Image 1 (cartoon, rainbow, N blue to C red):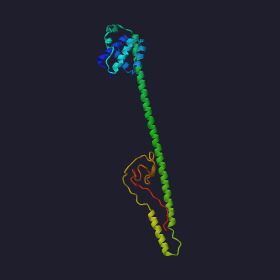
Image 2: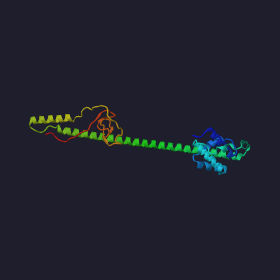
Image 3: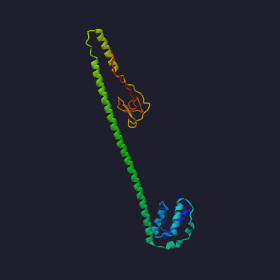
Image 4: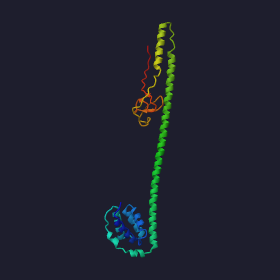
Length: 254
């Protein structure tokens, strides 16, 4: 963003007049435009030229207006300097001072940009590491829950097997009909205790938080995947087997 090319040329001429030479004045003017505030620009030029008079103040004001694409206030002064005098001015020390200062300013800008990029890269690496650590924690937590559920499943199966063996023992009775009836009842109970073939299907909803965002509900008894309350009971999104709610009632048939 900036003013017209005519305004730019006028400001470059005025800058050359202030500096006392016109070598590389375009590059120096471009460097001045990189300074954001008028206060910093005035301080920079005053220190550079050893002058803080009205001509410097007017130049700073017009540079600020040029950056905002506004008309210059003191543009008429741009045509008042004598280019012949500028060409005759051979103050090499002043030229070197200005050029070195411009180079130093460019170096500061480049260093600030490099530091900014480095901070952004450090933040990105930090976020990446935190995500990896969180994923590892979730995997470990999920693995522990699966192992715990499998352990409980084996214990339940062992308890059922032990209970079934006790119930199938024939009653010590001389009544043959009663013994046959008791044996039949035991066989029916054993048949009912056998798990039905698993059903498979497609899950209606998949959350994927594995109980980290919502309350964990249960594990799939086939693949061990953790289902949350948001997903509810239904088909496992991973293996497709049915996850059912088990209502266990304790009692004996008499």
